[in-house]
Length: 100
Image (cartoon, rainbow, N blue to C red; front, side, top):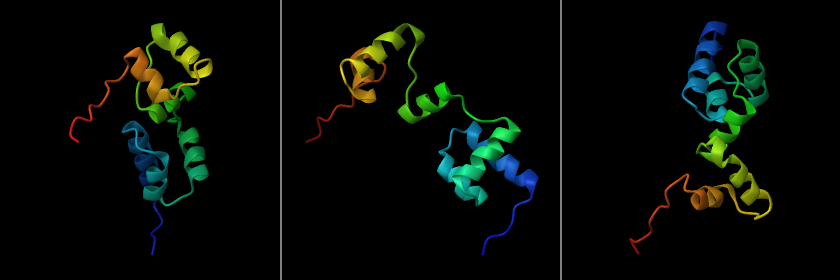
């Protein structure tokens, strides 16, 4: 049985979720609404992520401005995956798998 949240509680959960960089699906589950409804509400209260922030959130790492051109060149021309490009450019450290 789901209880209806009042609008202030709903807003607070959404703001906290966006602030803590939680996945949108988990925020929607907490609020008890659909993903589309969550996005509309977040847009109305002004806490949506910019496309650049959303891409960094999906990737899991930040691309500095001075390496952005190289990153996209590797992605498009080299057809590497995002994580492979980050490893090549030294944006993330490679996890060692020595424990075999």
